[in-house]
Amino acid sequence: MFSLSFNLAYKYFKSNKGGVFSFTSFLAISGLGIGVSSLIVVMSVMNGFEKELQDRILGVVPHAIIYSNDPISDYKSNIDSLKNNKDVLEAAPYISIQGLISSSTDSKGVAITGIDIDIENNMSIIPDYIVYGSLEGLKEKNSIIIGSWLASSLGVFVGDSVSITTSDIRSSIIGSYPRSATLKVVGIFELRAEIDQSLVLISHELAQKIKGFKNETSSIRIKTSDLFKADLIAFNAAKSLNSSNNKYYSSSWKQTHGTLFEAIQFEKLLISLMLFLIVGVASILVLSTIIMTVKSKEREIGILKTIGASDAQLVAIFFYQGLMVSLIGIFIGIIFGLLITLNINNLITWLEQILQRNLLEAYFINYFPYFIDIKQIILICALSFLFSIFSSLIPALSVNRLNPIEILRHE
Image (cartoon, rainbow, N blue to C red):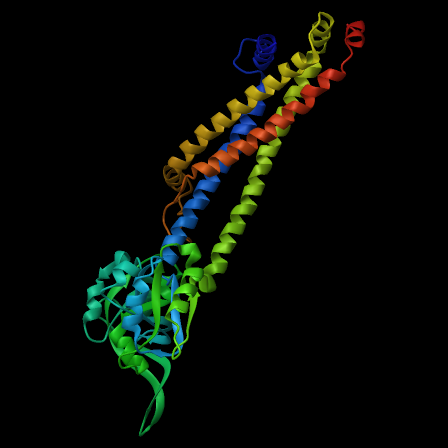
């Protein structure tokens, strides 16, 4: 049964003129290949952008912060206690101040962050992206590190001075006025993200002076073992520090940047659904191919039924034909999808040369990142296979309704 059905399926699959594929089979294979390869390329690039954004943004902002209603005086012992938590990779004092940074040419609102210089290498990726100066420069008195976009806007460079003004009020005999300081730029970082124009770094000791603290801090920053469970880890960590005298609270990156990543996930879902429409169209081509084959081979079907071929054998002929189209189309889609993904940056460079413009000038990176997720590719292929097989089975089952007497009477 298998041999007869498969041999006839292969015969119908090939071109009558001796070609590898018949024209209709070629169209179905091409459509399916284009659909699968498009899904692989687009999803891999979106995965790459998501991962790059995750590394660039969440590599800088705190995974989570533990804070209290009052300044934390015993933060060093709390940090030691937090480091004993297996889910906390690192902990450090953290002071965040909203302020205004000014140069002789411009002023900008920024987030002024007081960091522990010795631990920052373990806490964030900023030290790896300092393009001028170094993190060690913050050990100088009254020093600051700023982002490249902010430096360009202010017209300053390493060695120049800027002024910062905060909303904290200082009182003296002559009245009350905002706290301010003149600081020397000792470093410039470049993440090519929004953070480049909104974040500046100072030492924790300098931040303490600006806030008027002595041996206190406003919060403790923690780096968690699981980024996407940071809120739960921080909540449990804060709970472990609670005592009768102090109550601690927590917040995570999900409160500050969670909506951004939710938007990315939603966008990926919408694009996936749109691209699966291509696979749906390709499945219709598979269905059309089998229908046309059944229609053109009615005389042969009538003869086969007359000489005793079973309905199962006849259905299997066209089902195997659809199976061959599906497997070859998906295989070609995988090959081309992976080849295009792995060479996406070469293709973009070639396209930019033709168009004479930079296609990525509006983005935070100057290349197309990609991340090939094997599980995702398997899911794409499995769904595409189900679509096409279902499309093959419908017309194949219609063979059972053909009457060999009626077919041969009109021949």
